[in-house]
Image 1: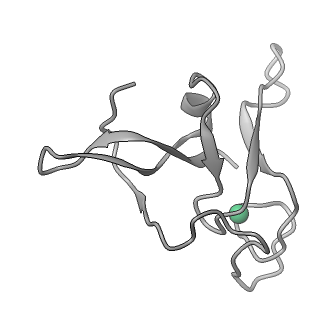
Image 2 (image 1 turned 180 degrees about the vertical axis):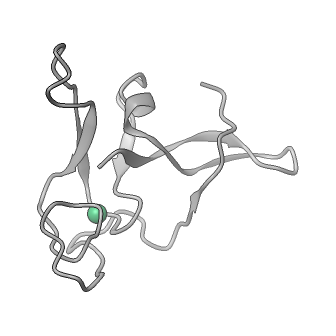
Amino acid sequence: MEIVDVKQFVTLLDGSRSYAWQTIPAVDALKLAEPRLRCPECKGAVGLFRGTTDEATANRAEHKKKNPGCSLGDCFDGVKRLAISPIEPDEKSINEQQSDN
Ligand SMILES: [Zn+2]
């Protein structure tokens, strides 16, 4: 997948600061130092992988455990479900670009 959720301090639209999940490109997450990560859709744990220099494979994130209930993964069976062990599923992710990084 090309996007991930990371938990970090963000500035909300009203100017307040919040420690929250934010959906960002996996490429940007690779630049963070030890980010807390989860899948934006199924909230499962994900890992980051660097692409090869010849660009045969891109920078990306992958589920640590394959989830057939997640359309962002590569084994989606057509029915969306949360991960078996979702990470903070009650906390919504923020979908905007502002960040201090
Ligand atoms: Zn997922």
